[in-house]
Length: 296
Image 1 (tube, helix red, strand yellow):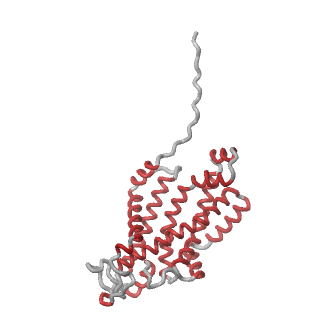
Image 2 (cartoon, one colour):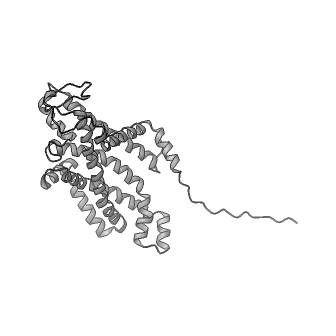
């Protein structure tokens, strides 16, 4: 007599996440993202190490070398006061990175809680936050930043605040969209069924799983802030001369485009390289971190 054995179904296993090393390898296989990451890292290091690697004092005039062409003594030439362009670009990168990082931090400190509130609770909270966001989005980013900087007054700190406030609506929308998507997934429903409070659900389950989208938004916000700082400084609403800034350098180069084009070319190339690098890095991070997207 034989007895039939019935195989018990195995318990469903939770999907395993790819290890961090796999994501890093996927990122390094994206040549554009890798190139962007290297250039962005060089830009950040140059800004941090400017006092150590700058060959001259960026604010010290040298009237014996006014409008000197790029050469061995001054690799990127000098301006109308004889100040070394390379040193001023290095110190100008410090201002750009300060605004880029601090403005994004400010936007996240305000925008993430508001986005979580709107997406999770809905109803009145969602309506109020969405109307505020729509009102701010009615103004283009740079127009809103210029208006706020004009109200606050010209300084690097006020420019940082103005650009940070201008980036809040984008952070709110990303956070709200991720919260609306994540609050209906199974593990959030299980957390609620097990008695998890709103704080537990929001900060232990929803926010950590929205981190990927927020990281990508940060890499998009940094180049936008760099361009915003250059524009505000160009208009006289950001860094004030004689302090170096890429925007200040472009503003001062207007009167010397014919005799000394390098005064505008090199600061402009620095802005283009920095913004392009962070955008390429952001595209690569989006491809790697977005679980719904495929690899290119």
